[in-house]
Amino acid sequence: MSLVRVEHVFKDYRLGEQTVHALHDITWSIDAGVFLAISGPSGSGKTTLLNLIGCIDKPSSGKIYINEEDVSEKSPNELADLRSRSIGFVFQTFNLLPVLSAAENVEYPLLRRAEISSEERKQRVDYFLEIVGLAKFADHRPNQLSGGQRQRVAIARALAIKPAIVLADEPTANLDKATGREILSLMKQINRHLKTTFIFSTHDQKVIDRADRLVQMEDGCITAFGVRNETDKTWNLARVRPVADSENE
Ligand code: ADP
Ligand code: MG
Image 1 (tube, rainbow, N blue to C red):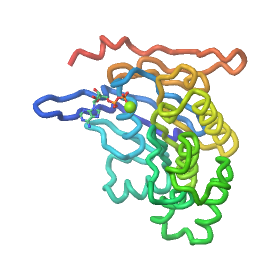
Image 2: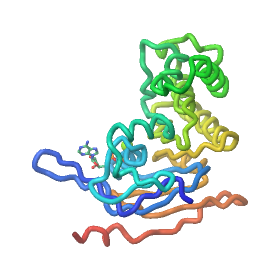
Image 3: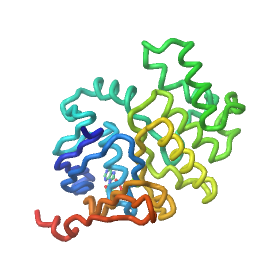
């Protein structure tokens, strides 16, 4: 069973008089437990695809299944509920709430889960801040933290709901190289130990090379699927049809 299945998904945006074809006939499935990179130049559709998988936005046509459940049929409330239980988000610009402490930011997504007691919320906050190495910074506000520390808080916040999937849109793009590598290592450790599935977008080759699965995108299409060879660490790439073939409409 696939964790995520995308079938013939198209996404168009209306921009004034124009229509932007952001995604063109994407078909793809993702197994649970992978550490997967979506690579491609700016404008290739990475964020759009992550937003669809994350149920933040809906496809113009096509189907998306999460745990074999069709999410295209769900109401906004049902989607919010699904997100709050199953999907953690990490963003390029961290997106922490500036007036809340690190601990309160991590707790925040748990507040809409009525079944989680305040005691359990506190346990989860402590546990995940510890995992990201920030137990001592629980009371600090985002502006008292470095970029790398802010991204660690964001990762703890994503994990606090115990999601099936963490979606990270260019999580290292606003960090210096060394900090970006640390964040990737942290995500990888969590992937190994907690078995959380990570899907992250990037155009940094160093970040791509930390992944164990790869999807390459260009002009709204998937151009290759990659599986990393565990012994010599090279990529086995299966190319999909050339981009030009997809432009006959
Ligand atoms: P990436 O994340 O790979 O840079 P995006 O998914 O952000 O790519 O964008 C894919 C295409 O869709 C681009 O041409 C972009 O300009 C367009 N696009 C993205 N979001 C919107 C939007 N809200 N309205 C109109 N066009 C958009
Ligand atoms: Mg993007």
